[in-house]
Image (cartoon, rainbow over all chains, first blue to last red; front, side):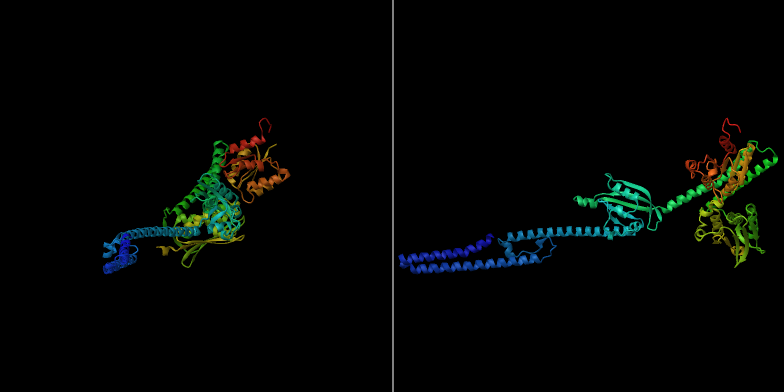
Length: 493
Length: 128
């Protein structure tokens, strides 16, 4: 700025000088006429000198201005991200002039501004990345929640449902997006769950609360869930309204129907096994006590009592064997001793075992075996067990005076044996479940005692141990037919 | 006069053991294989006390007692339950709702069964 002022002062000084000379000349014109020519010459010289100085100074200023402009253009056209502005060359005139300071100042300011811009850009990129990540994360969480099979429900500080995944909407039969009245008590039709949510939501302290709840769906089917409710922390501080929206409680439901059913079936099984074991034990204990008390006075009575003890001990042993065999077969640790043998011989033996039970109920047990030799590659004891179980089941669930038939035959290169009865028969639902371990048909439970192990064990023996099939045809009130198909011995060798 | 007992159980050997012990103790004993048969016998001749199993074909022990409680003649008939069932039976509920005198668990002692029946039918000091 100082050099610009200097450039302007030079021509102005020349003009002042010229004006002074002109004034001097006019003074001398009136008072000293003899010096007129000298005055004119002096004035002219002074004017000429002043004009030359002024022209020179103006030209210099213009060149400097152009150089400055050129330099500014170069600076502005340089790479925006280039922080080292010293790379832009400074014109020589500018370098040597008093304008240099201005140029350097501008250069530094520009570098600083570019640096700030770059910092802002970096900062903006980081914010954009974080924002994008947050959006991605939210989408991902939404997708996870949507695909989660377990229901998840969130309520806010106003006790309104603020989030529910499709599993929760389906469980409680609502569509949150199209629901205006979102109060949890309106949407969740389970008083105990509502209590759990509200209590958790208004507690001072955090921490999880779990419960096991039975929740009925729209069709009236009840399901067991293990629920875990937990207060949500407040993620950001805001005004009271924001706080109420932000805080709340999340509850996650885990379907424990299977566990509950398993527990129930196990409890039923233990109860059933215990009952089955206690019955023969009761006989043994009672008769041992009668003998010990000397109640049996004659040899015949003593023999009778000992016979009962023996038969009840056998019964207990069979039960324990059934249990162990089933457990071993299921665990895959059973030792199988297969040989080629006659199926008819095994079936004859099985029929003899069951005959007394049939006689006791007045049931006609017909044994209609093939006259041909039916060779099977089988474990004798196991095959016998399967036939006894099927025959025993038929006798148990056939009314007094009914009929049970045991048949064997050769069909399509397979060996078949059938146990058919004129018993109570099974519904379609029971037919599908009758091979389930521990399953007992409810309506027939009182008809006979059992553990629900005989048929599953027979199926395991025929199918898993011998590679055959065991199927069932049954009609409620008419009777049942179990058909076991086994590969022929020749095919096995 | 001999006190009359009715025993209901679908396990014949249990019936025979109890019958043997109680008969030798001087009771008149009749036996039934299930609840329905037991109910028929009760109607034929009212016993002084009934011992019944819980799980039986046709009509179970609880059904038999409930039916007896519905009829004037058998409303106060003393019942003992002889069962292999465990905790699934609420003894308190049996006593309160069905007025069952006691539950005897299987395996059982015929000696203890006799003692329990004696306590009801032959109270100390009473002449038999």
